Length: 159
Length: 176
Image (cartoon, rainbow over all chains, first blue to last red; front, top):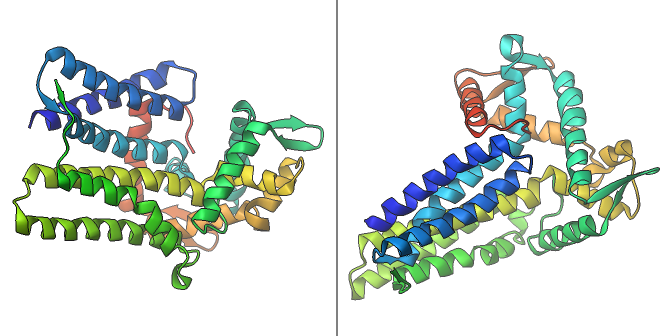
């Protein structure tokens, strides 16, 4: 089926473009991956229109997004998963092992925590003030939407 | 030339996929499933898939359903489930989002130490460590013995190698 092949091919090209762009750009890799995914879909439709090949929009879109969303899932896990980072830390240590306290204080409570605080400041969600970290209007909006969604889905606590 | 016409099996797949958050919101309120986020998600996805399969069985009695529609419908439902899973994981496990929520609930500025302390309703950052470690131990990826964490072979090592390969391929400078 033409749509399946075209969708998969452009989606694989999208994966390759993420690998190229993330290396060179300074912007957030997650934001780049999402923007490029949308661009990839537009490129796919444009190519089909330019070639003048009769094709089903839905079959093209489903084929493309199936691969793109699967990739985004994998990308998110590799980029932000604390569990995978812990596994990598252990892999890089001698004998592939470490004391629990070292992993907890060195990574979860320091490295990972500090990098998230830095991301929150850089993204304009919080501001560092004399008393610590203050939620800015943008952060308040995001947190408010998240709190509303958590209520809708009866998620009592997160983290 | 793009053809925008859509077949009934695909419409049904989109409709059942779109209804996933509804099943999820209902299932999350069942007393037996309270707080069991992964199970809630698994069940809501299963309900959607079962409903679509039931529709296909019903539809095939009146007219044949093309194999390509079954394949595309399954791919659409899988893609939608992965999208919801990404959002759901962010809401139920997101570290940064939980920090923002802790600040929102505090109602004022918090020092890094105070933020670490009030994280997840007062459980603190230690909870993140305990939760992730217990998950990794249960999955057979690491072992925990006398305060030492060790990567298990072959599963843990294979996952670490695959993860390193992905990071190298994607050119990510920093992860986690």
